[in-house]
Length: 489
Ligand SMILES: [Fe+2]
Image (cartoon, rainbow, N blue to C red; front, side, top):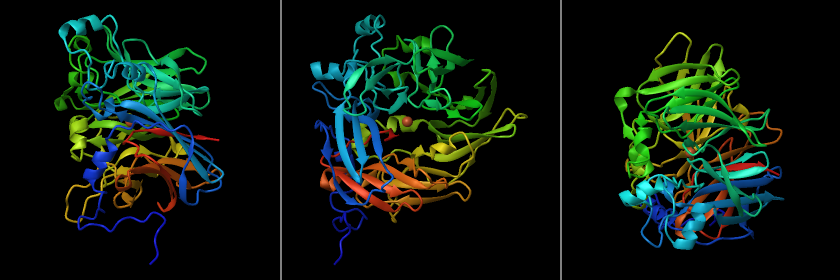
């Protein structure tokens, strides 16, 4: 009998192997990781392409259970950095708790020290008012990593980011991304001509507004445009073309005047107001002129996928949920019970000069999240989106969360899927083959949880056919995380 390099136990009648069900994935993938490894060589099966050389840097929450109680939400776990260094056909791995002020406060006290997305350490009204003098915003950069000049930043949805060393993963200090009363999101874009990081942020204060800002690597920033708004909507990402930044507002909104004094964790200040619909604006990056808003039916969005110009029209593709219930669905207790959250679909909004309303078109039937594209097509026409999806068994039963790697082609609306029964996949990061011309000529790097083995692996897939090329096994399970970036050697 032949065996594959990563043989699994025999599948059960449910299609999952023993120890590899969605329930097992929830147990292992949302368990605290306390292990920190400095620089270990990983056991490898398969072959890594010779051209692939560099580091995959990822962040994600990794500790939810504190000495006193637990945090409330997946997003609120303490951030852990992970590094997969790929060179000469081998993979080395390191991981380290992010030791900004939130990480250090937790290590010193065993408690959460700062306001997180859905957890607030200030339990009493008195503490709440006292905390106005020190907003106590977190720097728990569990959402994304990015590079500004020579500095690598671990980011969350507050003005504070932690600078870290991409080799050792040591935390080097805390950097301000915006003023105290601003909330930048953790999905910046880049202006490759200038090296600027482009941020979208919600500026609060007496005149709340969305701001698109270019931050310069050497310090300083330029506010490109301001969009006044009475009740801002939750912002997680935005769109970018060569000429325009696109701001999309979901009707999950809050009142900035009440946020500071409500005594509730951040996200509990938001209200779902579907009657107001969604809105989109296009901002000329050079002049700062704002076009729009275009109105659209209510939807909720974490991730824009891409945007591009076509004459006078602007195409904006994003992953849309019908409502904002996903926010509650990602509470840590619900995920640990293996409840499967909703998964969004790819929708296209075409903004034209002659219209003020836009009706989106669904581009593909198969839902997915954590979208990635070939960076060369950022802001340009494209046809391929990668992501992660849920597997649904033949009996129609809901499957696991973060289970498959998906490849959706827009021209035919089809989605190809990579699935390894009993394993659970994270965000697939596309790395282009250096002389590759086709949009999908490269590899996908995805961190896969293998609950039956109590391990995780870096899996390298051929982005053309989703065939598995290599798997490098980490000696501990890596909790389900969010985003990462590949830094070429
Ligand atoms: Fe995100």
